[in-house]
Amino acid sequence: MPMLEPSDSQEAYDLTVRAIEISERWRLPVLLRVTTRICHSKTIVVRRSPAKPSRPVKFERDMRGRVMIPSNARPAHRRLRQKLSEIDAWNEASDLHSVRNGSSKLGIVTSGVAYVHAREAAPEASFLKLEMTYPLPMEAIRRFASSVERCVAIEEGDPYLVEAIRAGGGRIEGKPEMYRFGELNVDRVRRILAGDTSAEPAPPRGKPPALCNACPHRVAFTVHKNLNCIVAGDIGCYTLGVLPPFEAMDTCVCMGASIGVGLGLRHVLPPDEARRVVSVIGDSTFVHGGITGLVEMVYNPPTTGHVVLILDNGTTAMTGLQEHPGTGRTLDRRRTGRVVPEDLARALGIASVYVTDPTADPAGFEKLLSACLVREELAVVIARRPCLLAAGKIKQYEKEFADQANSCDCESGTHF
Image (cartoon, rainbow, N blue to C red):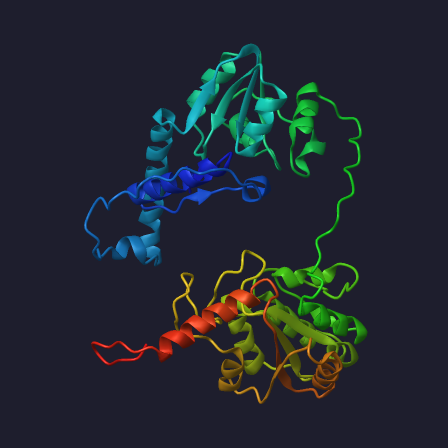
């Protein structure tokens, strides 16, 4: 699929728009590749007016293109290769690559945030900046390489550009093996250009991330540590339970994996170890990818039972306090249907379902979890307490909903 790589916040916005345009034109998915530094930086972004649809929105039947049974998939593969050939030719003439002329002694082929680092590290160099990195504009790359004495690819991670350019017959110099690891920065780019493979200075020690001091999740992980649980974890701010002082998370794979991984451990471990396994998942992650695991728990229960702990703080705390299907509010704070995890668990046939506030009664929570672990039955525990960062806003939203419910539309006589 076509791939675009932004080098700053403005390009992240602009290339998202371009990705949609490319996708619409060729009816293909487009990958927007963003690295850590792009995601974790902020700059002013100038928006543009949304484009009007190029054609009326209506359903267009295309069974050959959308139902990939074998007889449709084989010709679809040929159509895909034809589309990619067209995109390749289009990219050669597009504005998604640009040359910045400088010294003819050094030319740098780069993309993404590495372009920014390289510009600062070698301002005198000539640059070929690539914004579409698949398919690559090989003719433009060859022309650029032939215009400089030395041509170097500056890229983070594995040598994708180097290998692709060399495979296409291009002349390019890559980076030493040691620079495949970790992020690039200006100093590292200078070292790459100088061929410096000496040991790098140790980075300064920083403060590791941690759960907020009064985070409700802290009680849960303290109890996990006290009970020596084997914790199948998940993705959220509670993943920080793996760090000191808790060190109480043993696995983390992807969103929603905690329940399936916990069930797998329960099935294969000796009974004395299986009884220590608990799956821990946040409320947002649960509605995103944990529900199917709960179904599997009911359908294929381990002989020792299992315990799922849902840490319900009423928001998506890790990525900015967004709403989710378990809050009863849309992203623009309108009232909507709410997925209630305890109701869902009971509807699936799980008899032991508990809702508790660990912060209000830490000893009671530890007693409850300990009892669930030894009873050898399926249990779901919802640890419910609002995230400290979101609690004030949640109260405000609920008050607004209550005010609306009590207000009357004088014209229609209906209540909101």
